[in-house]
Amino acid sequence: MNRRGFLGSLTAALAAGGAYAWRRANQAQSPPLPEGEIAGAGAALGHRLRVADFPQPTETLKIPVVIVGGGIAGLSAGWKLLKSGFADFVILELEPEVGGNARHGRNAITAYPWGAHYLPFPTQESRAVRELLADFGVLVGDPFAARPSYDERYVNFAPQERLYARGIWHEGLWPQAGARPRDLDQYHRFQALMADFQRRRGADGRKAFAIPLDFSASDPDLLALDRLSMRDFLLQQGLDSEPLHWYVNYACRDDYGCRYDQTSAWMGIHYFASRDAHARDAGDDDVLTWPEGNGWLVERLRERLAPHLVTDALVWRVSAGDRAVAVDAWHPRENRSTRRLAHTAIWAAPVFQAPRVIRDLSPARAAAIGEFQYAPWLVANLSLRGFPEERRGAPLSWDNVLYDSDALGYVVATHQQLTAHPQQTVFTWYQALCDGPPDRERQRLLETPWKVWAERILSELSRPHPDIRALVTRLDVMRWGHAMVRPRPGFVWSDARRALEQASGRILFAHSDLSGYSIFEEANYRGVLAAERVLAALN
Image (cartoon, rainbow, N blue to C red; front, top):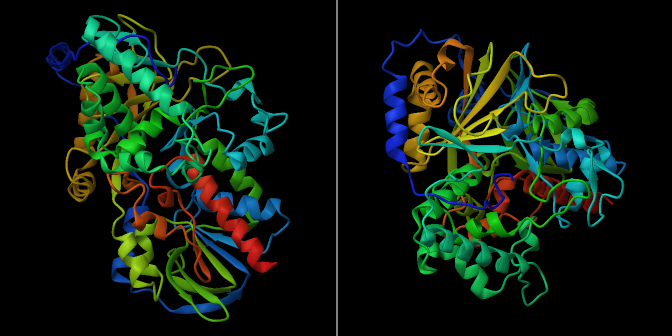
């Protein structure tokens, strides 16, 4: 089962055993750190917006539509425009590569993700995602079938998940030993409660919790859940089992970049109750994945949209007038700026950047954007000359989680290879920094040097894998200062979030930020919706 699935057993927290394993792993003298670096320059370039000392444009181009941002939302907007027969647009992207937080890398061993690494089977409401998957041969046959078929090469191979606790790897994401009767009872109560939410329909006939979020019911008692934290919701239900709280907290950290006491209960329930898609030849809890994660989809979009992409282009000014919107971009390699005059601009970049770039942004919209908070993340890719020795418990899986860890674990980039067992591999390590306020955690992320991150990651991995230091040949890290918007209590169904959904003038907002959380389906939905509005306006 994947991270969104329910597992059939529970156990109490077992931090003592993990600490013992950590001490033993660090008793021997450690070999020197491998080669590596901090990858990506987007943060440094993006911070230029604070100074705004860009050269004035020396070239003016005219084009009907400019899309700012080459993440999934921007690429989806371009995909929809092109699919609708409209090709007169350009996508401007700050980074050398498109993809946003679904970017990926590649070395002599394999491709690997730098961010989003899987896509659950899309719900029936996620129509555009299904169409896109059909376009690229991932979904086979009718994209809107109740149980569509998926190319088995892209469905996650077994074994899928395991959890390291008390010196043993356990299958699934909960330890399998030592569960007390009350833990099992609370687990089953929680499971039944989430199933009820999944089946519930609102007064308008909509699902209580849908993907995309816009298709969810708006009954007052459901929206009231947004004012609670997920932790408080569990306690209100009389659910205080430590293993249950650990799992729900892990789910929130993994999907939203914040702890369960920092997460809206509405969104916490959404994690468990929103996914009801079925597949013809796969389990409902299977996911789609590739060695490069969602970067595989980015590559297909990049190939389709290549003539429309301009990378290394930092948009520093967007000015809307009566007849056109002017989009000014700085090209750092040439140290020059260009201007594009368009009928409409789609802002598909994170919304927190908008007040520094969009001139004459209304006070109401600027105030709304001020309510958005972002989670910082660290992602590391470790190249290994060989696989660590497997000791006790479940075998190496695609997703490997450590119970008593601040991090989220690692995925194995070579897991989907169809060839014989590879000799080398890449582990992709994820950590959401959510112990303190996001600004403070972001500062810690940016100020901590590579050597410190590398040592921490290797120390963590040495607990289940004492031989890993001798196997790692390279360790690169990427810092995502604003990886995803945080769905904190009171925000998901707030006026601030919904204010940016409304189309206004020549500048349309289109980013997963508008949904209050960050997943592929929401980014795709926002981009496609903006493209449809553009097409309607141009027609």
